[in-house]
View 1 (cartoon, rainbow, N blue to C red):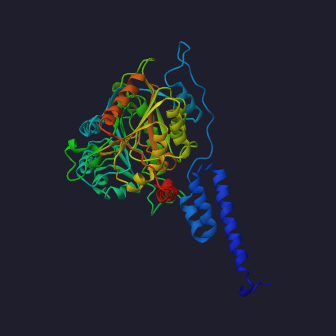
View 2: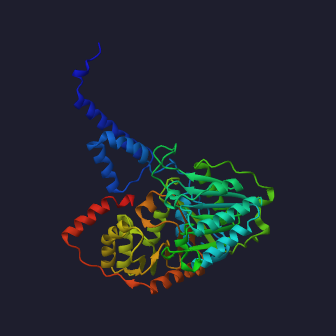
View 3: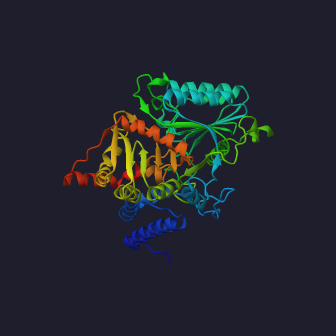
Length: 475
């Protein structure tokens, strides 16, 4: 006999719904290894208890942080022919344990000191491509620089070069929604990475592709922190207009690392559902006519993809490990500094045991909430003896240099969204001379900065910062 509707115990049904929501959360977090910041975990649990009919659908849409479930077996570290351990062996051993791409050789590294140098290098890469050209960026600006790059990509496609452009689904909106129709008409293949309103990838719409790279003929790589919009290239690019000038860091190089970057691009392209790539002539698979095969003594570099497509939090793990193993100095630059407790503790302990820790930040970034959220961590870091420097202009660069051991350069900020949520791309340089070159780039920015003065925080400020940090994981 059916139970009359009036006899249904709605309190019991509500309790069952809450228990089901919590069971889904626990099972999903355990099965998919969803490492979460404590504030994020507490927020989800409270929301599933207090607002289950709203929180559970939101969790199913936004709650997934990883899209891979198991780690491939680790590789063994390889010694050099004379039996010695190569540069950066600690980081390379850890990278091998996380099944990251093997360290590759490279040559012709150019670190772009200015926006005009970065733009000239990007122009040269685009204009010099013979077979293929891949561009991945978070933002393509609806401005003079975005139009300049788009025109060059369209021209190369009309010349018969295979051109693919991958934009983040949210970043495309932030950049002003540039018109991609002329690119498509010229033959450029385009794809949006997880558009928030039309994505079929349930549970992943909050995970953004923040990687930035340009690859020509699987042999020439341009990479770093710059989006393809005018403000990221500074006033000397000639395309800034009325926008404020920012400072940023990119580099380009040649060699096998570009092939690894292309493989990462292909994986992101396929995940985004981009049009199938047209096969290239066999000659494109062996770019030795463009890049001479390096010798066994060539410098080494390693691609560090980080994000939901990695079982481990790769960049975060390498960064914390390098910080704990630092002997003399740690230099870092980031536009947003909202670290989790582990990274902050590692930096503070390094400073207390005598390592010179220098952190370069913009005095005022383009995200006011991030500026407000950073002060508690900055006060703790300063009290541990670290030096914090504020650059008068906005700096968007992302780099960490540890001793002469490793320079980590790329797209990841030192905030929890970059470290745990975004698809990011960092490059680990192990050659001591090149590590020092990146350190010199940071030192020149530090020299142009003013020291940060930590001010004691009153009770109201402590409470306000605590509430802000509650949601800082989503900044």
